[in-house]
Length: 125
Image 1 (tube, one colour):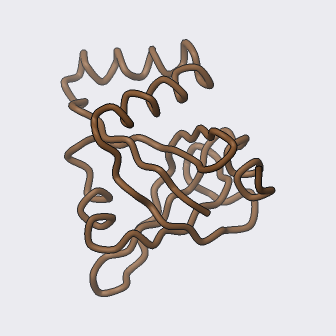
Image 2 (image 1 turned 180 degrees about the vertical axis):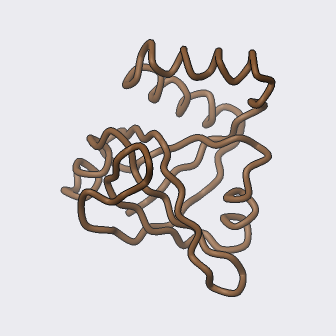
């Protein structure tokens, strides 16, 4: 396991920065899990970061607080969108790490109808 994967994967949250076509950085705080080789996040299928990753897989990640304020050094990586099976695996990793907190926020999103299908993202650092 690389030091960066361990450091980023063990963070409570990370700031995931994706890039618009014009190069504008778009940072977003997200939950994170790792498998020792790569780090993983999920996002709603409707999120803008998916379009940005499809156009350009280059990302920056840094440990952060829940607001996305970095608490450590940023690392460059490459993001890849996962298929449905990969997405289910990522949701399982995140659910295992965050437990009831993840279930609570998932339920709240469904009740507010602000959640929808999610997509798993693998990030190679």
